[in-house]
Amino acid sequence: MSIKTVGIIGAGTMGNGIAQACAVSGIDAVMLDINDAAVQKGVATISGSLDRLVKKEKMTAEQKAAAMARVRATTQMADMKGVDIVIEAATENLGLKLKILKDIEAAIGADTVIASNTSSISITQLAAATGRPDKFIGMHFFNPVPMMALVELIRGLQTSDETHAKVEALAKALGKSPITVKNNPGFVVNRILCPMINEAIFVFAEGLASAEEIDAGMKLGCNHPIGPLALADMIGLDTMLAVMNVFYEGFNDSKYRPAPLLKEMVAAGYLGRKGRGSGSLRLPKVLRKSSALAARRSRPAARDCRGRRAASRRSGAGLRGRAR
Ligand SMILES: NC(=O)c1ccc[n+]([C@@H]2O[C@H](COP(=O)([O-])OP(=O)(O)OC[C@H]3O[C@@H](n4cnc5c(N)ncnc54)[C@H](O)[C@@H]3O)[C@@H](O)[C@H]2O)c1
Image (cartoon, rainbow, N blue to C red; front, top):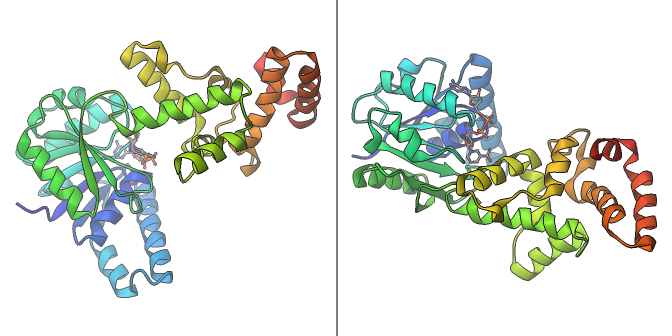
């Protein structure tokens, strides 16, 4: 059975991206959020995104209008009745997701598949909380959804082959390239990516190279499109710390311990692009400040003096005051 209508719970960053991907692929999207303002914000984001594609001549105005007509915004769970599959893309919170799953199940047919876009919550655990664990799967899109080709399909212990095949077909219909992985903290891509970024922060804190050199090294030496420190800045340092803590606790393995500098920066309110202040808090710049701090703590006298001067000149009392 081909999928004609997808229900999407959450109209935020991921939810509206998934709705856009459906709509431009000719699939109807019923997008739900908690109130009108939230759901209309999601619709406006899709419209703005498609406008940019029209401007770049990657889509005609008629195609945009046809895609927008496929997006139905709602705040009523009852509108999920009759959809072929529901993708849960609400805020990352276990209690919230468990409540949403109950509400979804009360609205949809017994055979309808539910997928969750969670980044870190166990698919097996979520599946077990539903009355249809075999029809539950992880569908982990990447941000920004319309641009990123990958979807990780995460099979819980209970996920049936039929459910997997259905969701794999949907991912392909959206123009994505799915990979299938087993349920595990961080699944596959974040399991590899986040420890690498964390290690880059360790390397920086040890003073092995400047932030710019670390990023240049990974771009030029490994062909990464963006350096690990700049990527941490984009992801958000609080998110990075939360993910590392999920690994650390989920695997009970010290190899996943978050870099102390990462913890310290989050404690200071330095979260990357979304952090306090403006873009001037971009990670490499903040790390330069922290570098001076680290240098003062661990290096011999000559460098210690340079570090202290740099720290007091660049970062003022904020970082030093909080770091103690
Ligand atoms: N942002 C990313 O880069 C990314 C990447 C992959 C997966 N994810 C996952 O996708 C999910 C959503 O993340 P996001 O970045 O879009 O978050 P977001 O904060 O941008 O959007 C979440 C939306 O969920 C809505 N919501 C909250 N409670 C709800 C409810 N009861 N019913 C309906 N909607 C509700 C919020 O109002 C909000 O609009 C999370 O599970 C996250 O882990 C995020």
